[in-house]
Amino acid sequence: MVVIEARNIRKSYGNLQVLHDVDLSVREGEVLGLIGPSGSGKSTLLRILDLIEPPSGGELSIFGVNTVEEYSRWLDLRRRMGMLFQRPIVFNASVYDNVAMGLRYRGTPRAEIDRRVKEALEAVGLSRYIRSRATDLSGGEQQRVALSRVLVTDPEILILDEPTANLDPGSTATIEAIVMRMNREEGMTVLISTHDLMQGQRLAHRVAVMIEGTVTQVGPPREIFYEPKDQKIARFVGVQNIIPGQVIAREGGLTTVEVKERRLVSVTPPPAEEVAVAIRGEDISLHRREPGYEEAENLFPARVTSIEPIAPFVNVTVDCGCDLVALVTARRVEALGLRAGMEVWVSLQAKAVHLIPRED
Ligand code: ADP
Image (cartoon, rainbow, N blue to C red; front, side, top):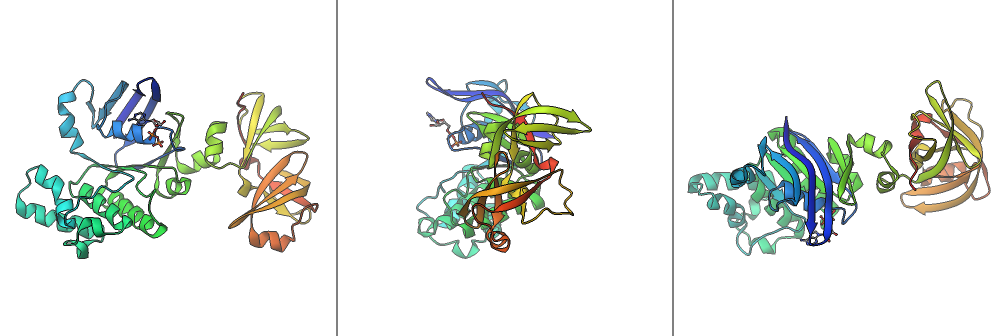
């Protein structure tokens, strides 16, 4: 079942159009990751989906309710969702009062508030701070207080806007673990934005990519990372090699592309004659001599032209008729004795050569 359905959502602030025809569906019980560069419109979209702000145009239905036509049900819908922001919002009061606030506002009986606040603090591992002043806690703990305040209202949809952007790795892992448990054990639907690609890949069942104010691709993480639809998405998801090429043949399920002086075969059906090949650096294997056992469709000699450490990996650029950047572990660079000028062999599966339309 789809719990949020957004169609052609537009948003302008004065003359500045921030969202352009955004389409997005969120399915019940899933973790949907919204990734995209800073300024691409993620926060704006989340505020609209959480009914904090109205869109300038388009259709939005939540739990099957058309939010434009049935605007009077706004509060009712909002109460079934909860949103956590990048900066933890805590008040200068006890942790207990911070978490109880939402329930008091809803007129929940005192004994029930007590039980639910304790439960919510238990869920985020902060029971021992129940009497502490929230503003005295660390940033990571404050974010857990804020999360606890959202969870105490038992939302069916949890919306998180870059919830760990300001946190250290330990606090980030804690927040991620709590959110994933809520999804697994309570079946909570989660919509989380992040500019951290790894976080998107770690947590999400599906990932939506937002570029320049619109959602340009939605799919399972592996599809987004290995089969980006266009050059902008490929760049954002960290594809090291995006090189223009020309399709010269299509035979037996393989496409042959000429990239400068090098022919590469790909399993992607050509989107056009003029394409760009997108190859992830980690898919390129380097060898000291011609490997006899390799099953890769692309196998050819090359010369190392540069070696650039980007801890914990190393970018090794080779010239094989075109320049390719391989992402290699420091250990393997050492084992192969790689240095500039050295002759090597490159192997690369046709599956790892992804073809996309060439940008103007
Ligand atoms: P992201 O979350 O992807 O970083 P945002 O949604 O925060 O992106 O911002 C997208 C664009 O919208 C930015 O250019 C930002 O300056 C602009 N923007 C966001 N909110 C407002 C606002 N209330 N008034 C004017 N411009 C805004």
